[in-house]
Length: 470
Image 1 (cartoon, one colour):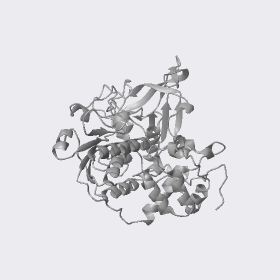
Image 2 (cartoon, one colour; image 1 turned 45 degrees about the horizontal axis):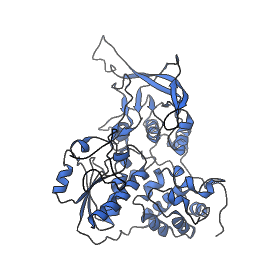
Image 3 (cartoon, one colour; image 1 turned 30 degrees about the vertical axis):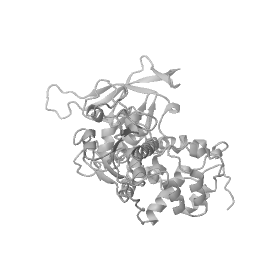
Image 4 (cartoon, helix red, strand yellow; image 1 turned 45 degrees about the vertical axis):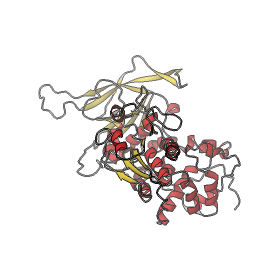
C-alpha cells in the first residue's frame, strides 16, 4: 500500500459532549479497521526508531504498526505483548503525546502518528476476537510476592510469570487493578478492560489475593517466612495531600482520591449506594492534573449543576493531558485559572446545634494570582494579587493537589529506607535497602504516570530474575 502522507492523523470518534456528560460510558469510541490501517500507513518506519526510545517499556512500535498495515492485527498484538502486559490500558491512559509520539518524525511538520490510538485498536481487536489462553511456561520453582495490583505490580507479575515464577499479588482493596480501578473513571478506562488484563495474568497462574493489607494483615518479613524469595512493592501513592487552609475538615470536602474511589470502586453513583457521595449542587475541584480532570468530569456525571476547575497557574502550565482538558471544556467544565483557594467556608447555626447543615460547605474564598519569576523547575511561580479575594459559591470541594506513598509498609518494615517525601529509595534496578526487596512506581516516585510505573515494574522483574537465577 502507498504511504499516507497526510499531515493530520485520523480523528478519534467520540461520544457527543452533551450526551456523554450525563453517562459513564467510554468517551473515545476507538478506530475502525479502515481508520487503523489508514493511520498505520502514516508511519515512515524510521530506521533509528526514535518513538521506541520514548516508550518506558520499549514496545517495538514500527514493527507492530507494520503488522497493522498488513491487516495482521493479532500479529501486531503479539509484538506489543512482548513488552507490555497491559496494552488495552496503555492505549487509553498513557500520555503518548509526551513520550513515543513526541519523538515521532511525522510530528516535525504535522501531527505525529497516533501510536496510542493504534495500540488501543490492536488490544481491543485481540480482546474481541481471540479467546485462546496464553501458553503457560514451565515452573522454575521460585516464589515471588507482589504488593499492590496497580500497573507496576501487574507488569512485574506478568513478566515474572512468563519466565515460570510462582507469583502472588497481594491487593489491599477488594478488587484487583489498583489505581486503574479506583482512580481512573469508567468513561476513560472501562473496568471490564482492566478485569480482562488481570484475567490474562491469572491465565499464566498468577495468584491474586485481595483484602490483604501488607503491614496489617501480613508483614514483609512474614512473606519471606511463607517461602517467598523476593518481594516487589508496588503499593502506589494513595495518601492524599491537602492545602492546609481553614475549612478543609468541613462536610463536603473530599480528597480526589476518596472522591474517585467512592465513585469508581464503590459505585456511589448508583441509586442507593453504601458509600454515598455528592449529588447535584456546585462543585469546585482544586488542581490542574489528570486526576483533577477526572474528578471534575465525574462530578458532572454524578449530577452536579456546575463544576469549576480552580488552578493557580495559567493554561500553559496546566499539567493535565491536552485531550483530557479539551474533553472537560467540551463538557462544560468552567476553568478558573490563575485562582487559588485560601479558605473553605462552612454553614454555622449556633442557635440550633442539631441543624444538619452545620459544618457543611457553603463557599470557597479564593484569591486571584499572577505569574512571577520562574521556580526551581522553570515554571513561573504564581503570586497573589493583593485585594483580589472573592467567594465562589460551592457546595462541594474536591482537593486534587497530589498524593504521597502511604507510610504503612515503611513503618512496619525494618531497614527500608525512604526519602523525605515518603518514597522508597531504590537503585537503578529497583532494589531497596533490604536484600531481595524491590520497589517501583508511585511508591518510589510519588504520583506519576501509568506507563512509568509499568517501566519500573518491568525493570524490577528483570532484576529479580537475575537475582534468583544466580
